[in-house]
Structures are given as C-alpha cells and as structure tokens.
Length: 299
Image 1 (cartoon, rainbow, N blue to C red):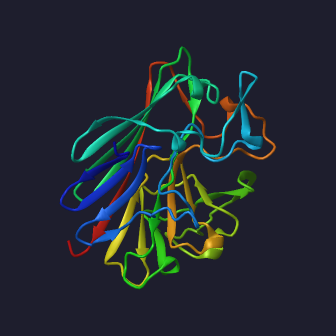
Image 2 (cartoon, rainbow, N blue to C red):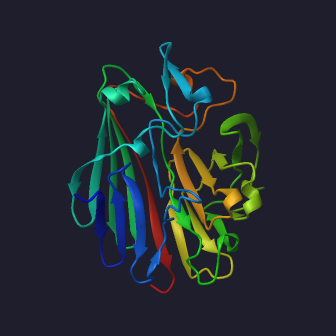
Image 3 (cartoon, rainbow, N blue to C red):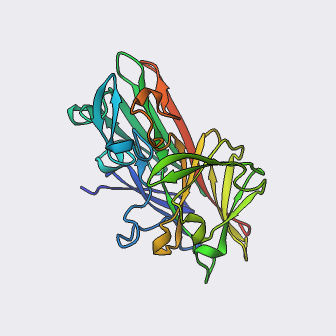
C-alpha cells in the first residue's frame, strides 16, 4: 500500500507521506511547476518535516520533567514516525499520531497529535492539533519546516528573491550558537523595513529566528519579476524561522512558523520552564494553522 496521499483540484496537486505526515509536493498544474523542495539528500534530505514535541534542540540532547531525564533529537520524533491516515477525500486529509510505550520513554505525556491538510483553489492550509489525554497539564512545542523552491520565475535562483512581510517590522532576532540560543538578541533586525533579500551570507550564522512580530503573512517574490508570489500566512504564530543550508548554496528557503524554539545555552533542563513551550490542560485541544498560497497576477 502506498505511503503517499494525494490531494487534487483544478489548480494544485499536493502529495503527503504517511512517514512523518510530511508534505512532499505542491505542484501547480497551470504553471507546471513544483513549489516544494524535493529533498536532495546531498543538500537537505527532507521536504517539510513536522516538528513535535519540540522545536530545535534541547541542550545536551535531554530535558527533565519532574526531575526525570528524557532524551530527544533535534525537532522531536514526529517527523520520523509513521502517522495513521484517519480520513481522506479529494481535497483534504487528516493524519494522527497517538502516544504509545515508545513515545512515553521520550515524552512522558499522553496525547493525540493530528496534522490536517486541505486545499482550496490555489491555497494549501495545514493545521496541527494536540489533544491532552493525560491526567494533568502537558507541555510541548510544535512547528513547521517547509522548504520552498526559489526558481518559480524562469532563469532565476535563490539570490534573485526577497521575502516581503505584510507589515513593517522591528523584528527581534534570537541568535544561535551551534543550534542553541546564545542569549543574544538583535533588536530591530530589519531596521524597520518590510523585506529581507535572500543572500547566502545572511545565513552564515545559521537560521534567522524572529520573535515579536506583527506580520500576518509573508511573500517569497522575485525582485526582478513579481508576476508570481508564494505567500505563507503566519497569523498568530509567535516565532518564525527562516533557513537555507548556506554551505550548499541551495536553491530553496525554509519558512518555519513555530510555537517553540531551541533551548537557551547553559539554561536549566526543566521542560516546564522552556521558553515558548505550550501548556495544555487535561481534556483540552491546542490548534494552530498556517497556509501556503500560490499567487499569479494573471489569474
């Protein structure tokens, strides 16, 4: 049985794998173009991993809950597990990951984690839901990590593109030190501007992580030809990561809305005190949504 699920309408064909509930393709039929990075293992072997129950790294590879240590790899375990397909039609599907003995050895909470995909015309919406099945509150982070091809205008590549934010921003950039937050913050990282030109040198110190922003969406657009745009709606997401593997000079950029972030270096390992972690009371549900929209001025 195929592990790939396909959603399709007159404009988009979207493919998702049961492995990690990971988005594998956003193909625009009229443009005859693939907008999602196709996981070249020599560059970056993923398309759009789902990050749960942590975002980023925990220091020394472990964290503590009630003085008990648990080990987790970067970005958690959901991206490397098979998710159950619970519903599907032509335009939508729902994947589910439920706690079991294995997850409890890494993450001591009872949960159901759902990833919901839905297409409508030229837009793909992605929703993450967490149900607390435990007898007490649970703590977690969740985030997205999709890579988008920077070649949707003919004869262009990465450094021909810019990211335009829906509002002028005084972003706070959280700086990294070997994958952990260093504690340093760059205030007003865009100097009140509304765009960020994609330059490889910008990512020499790892991902750009923005905290405290107002924009509800951002557009990836070619600076020489704005006839097509890829819009990512990020309303209500508290943190945003932007990344490309700088040493590879790759032709894609990751736009990563997050509820959570990597540990602060030399901080205590208490998971309940981890910055930007979410707290969910028993029998409650957490939900967050972002969307990807392909905009064509001629349509």
